[in-house]
Length: 513
Picture 1 (spheres, rainbow, N blue to C red):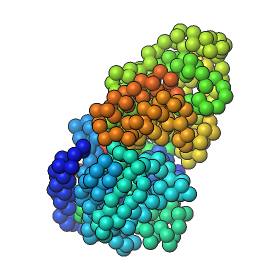
Picture 2 (picture 1 turned 135 degrees about the horizontal axis):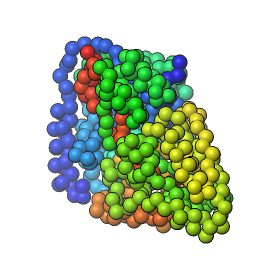
Picture 3 (picture 1 turned 180 degrees about the vertical axis):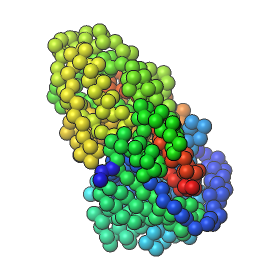
Picture 4 (picture 1 turned 120 degrees about the horizontal axis):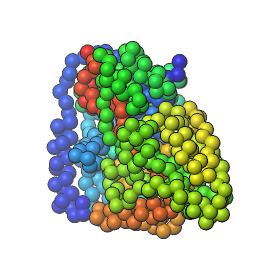
């Protein structure tokens, strides 16, 4: 089967408040975990190593098995943070952060969580030989110092305003002895963390099985077993939900919402997504995409409003740049490109392509909401301005080997990142980054300046300029962000969808009748 502080006194108050919140997180002991919860998603992870992935299928699993120093969440539409394995953090000066760590926490293999584990995890990601996907997010860290067993200090080369945000998203803490003894290849298929669920087994392309960590520091989960099943085909996922083979189905297409709503067994739950969906254009290779006018023509040639209405049935919002409203740095003044096919034709002619050209557009199947259908509709719209796209569809496991290194000229990409503008603009647009297919020194200067000042107002100003420049240069076909739609068995209690697609059953003490 296949199935995201400017002065010491102010920071000290923050430290006190965070410590109080941390204390509130320690939950009372619950009854023994029981029952089984099955989650269907559109593909299988490529790895379960928390430092080596760049995909949401892995993230959904490791969020159950690992903890971060800090937890991120959305409150009143804004990014917020609270303690997790760190009980408090303090900026001692603009380049030194001190973290107090939670005591009495153990990894699933019995190792103690302590300052050594934090130092090891960060240094593992920073090691160039490791080739960690999220190394860019911590590149400003110069070193990690152990003060005592439960205190660490992170020293950065420059002021690093996104450190807390990045730690909350891309730095799960791993057990040093286990990783050293077992090696990376074993860790990639047998993860060990401090999280609410322990890894049991992974049958590739069939299921990943997790079991409750009854000694979890927040208190044991209510559910005994959580299973992740990869089911690429949307209709098959929904059919499995309606036949009670799965309890939560991710990525429900709008066309099947009514079928779920009319079922006595299941219901629909939605949340605005932090994920943006765009088409990346490779501007670094010789060809038409090197010309800004061609890239602008592509943007003018796609009717995003029609795509959202006809393909997503209204479950989306057009974007004029790479950021979504939930992200720090989003500027609503950067408006979407209007649909103007005549202007697109004029730009093509000015660039020397009056008869258009042909390219290949690569897309996944079942990863993003109506991904294949969106790609086919885009190809149909661009055909009208003489841009001929051949749509090539891949299963996710194949797709992730195609897009990161510029193997294909055009590809669909969804990205939410850290929920700070830097989490998208740095890895996807800065010159020389692995995922970037664009190089613009003016853009680079703006983003680098924004990631090296603690003045949040100045960061907003710089990100506005960077977003405006990206809109003008059009290194992507800017598309939309949508709604995350879930089908949920009516017997599932105390679960809510989150904007990061994390499917976090433990956060709401989820259980099933």
